Picture 1 (tube, helix red, strand yellow):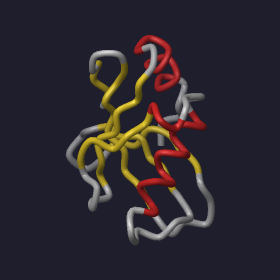
Picture 2 (spheres, rainbow, N blue to C red):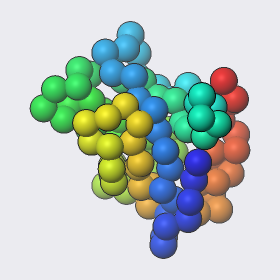
Picture 3 (cartoon, helix red, strand yellow):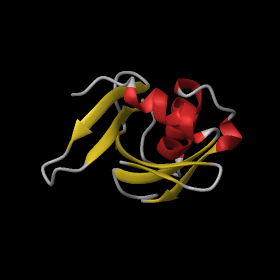
Length: 101
């Protein structure tokens, strides 16, 4: 789910756009057994709006500046790889605190 990547972590996220609220729901196990962060945003997946909203939600949740969060892959897919720049140990601890869905 999370891999150390230099000065941060690369995490997998399943995004639900056009939701009723913005937020991180927790850790979700997919049908293939992989674990991802389940997140939702109110923005529609048009003109990169949902991706920008996801970056803002993750930055707020992990107490990072917006510039420290960036989508590495999956720009047009629901499953994305997102890079979080920060102390890997602190970020891993924050991931461990997420509820399991």
